[in-house]
Amino acid sequence: MTAIRRTALLSIVAASALVALKLVAGLASGSLGLLAEAAHSATDLVAALLTFFAVGVSEQPPDDTHPFGHNKAEHLAALAEGTFLLLASAVIAIEAIGRLTGGDQPELNTQWWTFAVLGVVIVVDFSRTFASHRTAEKHHSAALHANAVHFAADMGGSIAVLLGLILASRGTPGADSVAALVVAGIVVLAATRLMRQNISVLMDSTPEGAEDLAREAIAKLGPGVELRRLRMRSAGGRTFADVVVAVEPDAGLAAGHAMADAVEEAVEEALGDGDVVVHVEPNEDGASARARASAAALTIPEIREVHNVELVRVGDRLELSLHIKLPRDLSLELAHEAADSAEQAILGAVPELSVVHSHIEPLAEEFDGEAVDANDVPAADAALRQATLEVAGTQPQDIKLRRTSRGLVAMLTIGVSADLLLADAHALASRVEARAQELDPSLDGVVVHTEPV
Image (tube, rainbow, N blue to C red; front, side, top):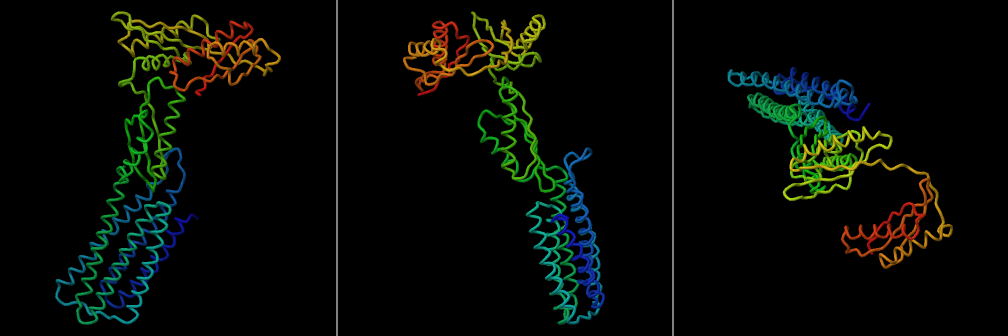
């Protein structure tokens, strides 16, 4: 049995004992205040039984018919508890008003044990209020929090009844009925507050303060994430968030997924205990023509990659060219059809374009290879060093050579100025690659990585 259910079970035992004590003492003494407290505790007994049942239901894992879990069972139990309390308070108030306006007050038979019973009741109320509140805070249980509120109201009512009996025993008989009205008022306030809170949850109201925390967490991720929609609700102490964010339309699937993970992690951390679902959609508003074109091309199922997207203005016309990669085993006819579909999709997404030129190429193969020592291919090593010195004016930082089924491939790292523009660094790397292959045609491929120094 979980800690929450154990606490609820202890509440049932305590409520049963209090009902018996208050009822016996109230009947023996004739105190309406004690009978009102007995009725109040009887409703708490019913509420504790409901809580015990509801917590057992809410702890069940999600299933096919309840994919979000059973957490709202606790709030339904708390709402039923509030209804019982309102009914009890109405009966108490009617009887108390009848006694106060009826003239003669019933004679009370208060003995020392009557006050002892109230002392025990107050101690028990304090103990179970503290226990329920502590467990509710620890486990975020709405039903146990409701119990804590009602047990505190019980304690306040018991103190009011004690004062009423003291005054009644000293010659103020109406004090007992006034105490009963106080109990009824306490019950009404507690029940109203409880029902309002749980109705808000059942109506999926946004938890207070939770939306601000979520928005702040998403904003910290930077301007690359645009929040389109945020819906939040809570149940059983957990906050559920439905988030829609927009990213650049040419962002790949992996980039979009990574962004969704970042948003989910940020919101969950901000909420403490949340269930967050993130939907990513392309941000077409204000996106560049290049981004919209890339995103449109990638909607064609056969197209795997898009690169070298370039815009050219010819007079008053805007043209676009791009390279698209497709599976190697695709026939030229099917590849051409995919390219035509991509061009039409781009023209639809970027109406300011007049022409789209596409270049189709196969996806790169995966090659088996092995490391090659530079001493075994001295001509290649010398060509790489000379090309780097001629073009970049420095020696390479690192050279790796691999023998593949395609031929000899070199991975070269060279140092360049950190202030160099990216376009200039790329051009320099391309010249090194071309010069190395010119010096040693046995190099089937050269890949240059530029390192800022």
